[in-house]
Image 1 (cartoon, rainbow, N blue to C red):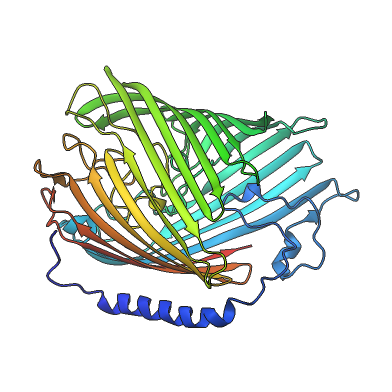
Image 2 (tube, rainbow, N blue to C red):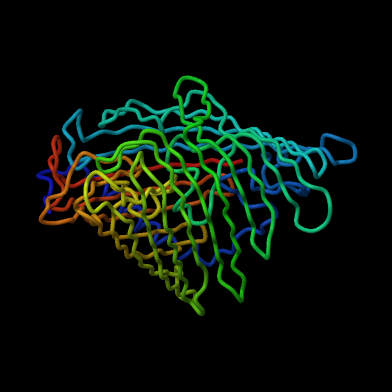
Length: 478
């Protein structure tokens, strides 16, 4: 491994450790404080999944008064209003393994605001509208301001729901622009770490079958135009079925899915052409008995890229153990991820296509590598220092699955560094994350990640240096 000759961030990392220590001490006094009595639905990242159908007495804040507004005398027509404001400051040194053009050191700010109106006409019709704006200060790292950084003013979601009348589990038809968050988000996610979130235009149908919540969809991806109006791309389709059964005290949760994707003119390990993929997957999650929990997810892919056949697969597993009777309720967890790569460049494609995942959550917060042609192992622990304060430390080790294939970014594209044929080591990463909730509406977080670049990472325009990433952010939800 190569270490950087200098590191301009010791003061920032020292401040992070000092803050963690201070919270650790304060947490002993705060840990015994009981949480406030919950009288409102929990916030959801996809705000349309919150249920504000019943008026809530005695709102805890003035903002709660807009969560259920009757629009008719009989109360059958009502509306809910809300929003979310996120702000994050990022500081980088060694970005892109020491990319030289235009530079590998920078500090910039990301800001986004979502507002929504949710109007219900009885129990059968619903109209939901969620506009957004996303902004970024100047970003002098390679790529400049990315397409996922800025969207001046546009529609994130806007759909109409029709619910079939009758008893039992309702069947819901949704038409319009919408976003999806399936399972552990390894395959389909809104992409919450991106400043501009993912959305699709089309239809989805939701119901229940044999204890499973089942959602079918036929949609097209909506790429972001930072200054214009976002419109769907008819060549980037997402369709299929996702079924999920929740955990119970007596049974683990289970997800089953078959999803299809279409993308135009892709390049994967020197094979170029339009891509069609079908992904068949399964996920098992929940308690393993006592204080142990675990999760396993795997998927197979078939399809084509241009005139070549395409196949791929991925598997992931996590095992955890929590000590509920110990101060801070520590949880230790570990696991691994692997996704196939191509055995040779050109011709048939063996590289797994990761879809639209939340890559940030699984292969390191620094987002150095995506879930394609990768092997990774991680070990970590989390502590609830107080009722609303959590500290998590995780270590990752990453390798390429096949050194005949490339190193892929968290966005799915190939990155400039190659890998020395004598080894597939990409590197190791350490992530430290401290989160705190200030009441119902405001969250804050502070993190530091360091990537120790492996000796095999090399390429034109990079130095193979280690990478430091420090970030601080807030989220205000109402």
